[in-house]
Image 1: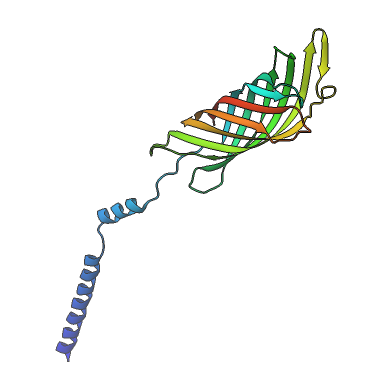
Image 2 (image 1 turned 180 degrees about the vertical axis):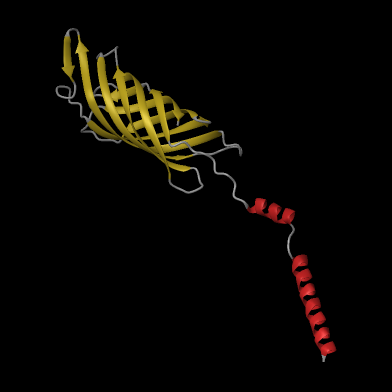
Length: 215
């Protein structure tokens, strides 16, 4: 009886040893486990800046009346933009912001104007290489314009174009453009035009070049 118990104990010990050996053989060592973990680890996401200031120069054409010739204005715009990512892990953005534009004309009517606009654009950034420090970004959208001041100067006489010249304060326009981003800086070109409304003047067509910095 005592011999039988010894044999059963030895058999149990051997079974436990074989089971432990099998588990050790089926497991990964530390180096293999670490390598697999690195392979499936997600790549760091590229940092996208959410804000920007920009300065734009835009020679524009103003249609100031139904039968009037278009008048060329020179314009400088100072603006702010906020970028909202709309698709997770993809470079699609909605750009919203506001800008202030000062316009002047010297050859025909010696006009001056101050305009505020709220633009909304949809932007896609294309990165040619994986470093993602350079991007090409087409955009398109619409703007709401509010002319705060517009005056014509003839000699010593000054005329308020919003009251006496038939100009309307509010108008909606569309715009398209292309930007080139280098890290936090960008350079862009754009074209904008009012939606056709024969009852509202001035009708503005604007070509612009702008430079900005993101933060």
